Length: 71
Image 1 (cartoon, rainbow, N blue to C red):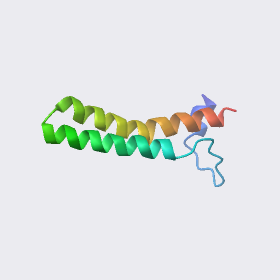
Image 2: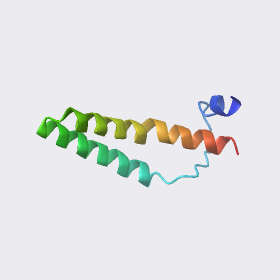
Image 3: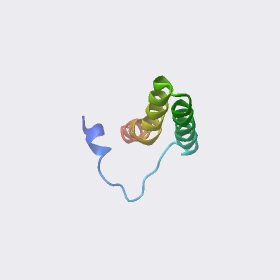
Image 4: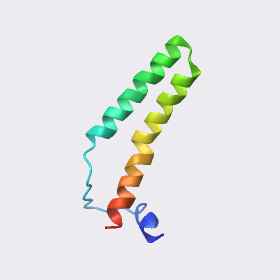
């Protein structure tokens, strides 16, 4: 549990082990899919796009940070 709590504290010199490029690509793809879902009125595509944005902006970076802080 200390690793999870450590992920929420500010580190002035973070050493991220992951490049932000995959997160940005996933976020942009999520926006594109959500917009397409709105255009064709497909609720499933909108939900998928929003889920991808959530993964790219919060969940995957948090998991990466937690796993990196446990090492």
